[in-house]
Image (cartoon, rainbow, N blue to C red; front, side):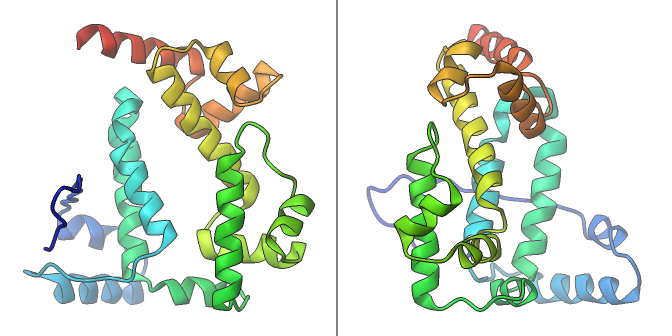
Length: 215
């Protein structure tokens, strides 16, 4: 493995017994696919096609420590997701979505994603985002899901909740985190947070405070 000097690196290692993977197969075809994957990778550090979905999965796993007692379930599900993504080329995902994306389309959709992440407190609407990036609304919605494996709305919700968790990790209370991210309705904020992490913001904050005390 080659690494640049002076650059901070984080390594993620996933260990899983082959029989566990084979036990997830449904039918002979999936069993054969998993056996092929295992035989191809045995004893080697292999290469695979990188993609935004794979990078997001790695980030999710690296950040799973903040989930406390839910960490194991979350980490195991993300590990299985990464294995599935690595064993299926990105082109296959795009073709299955039924839309063809040119290099220019991918650049414009990546620009759309940057706009969304830069404005989590006041995200642009679909029509506004389409105008900003120079694509029609159909290609924005279909192409975004094909390229990143999520809708614009789902990305906004997920990244907002991750940002909220980071704010609470730094000492903000629940109301402060919600207001910082543009939520005027606490019920909506609580429902979105629970959907993302499986517990209410107040429960998460309590765990975060307990962890800070132990440290």
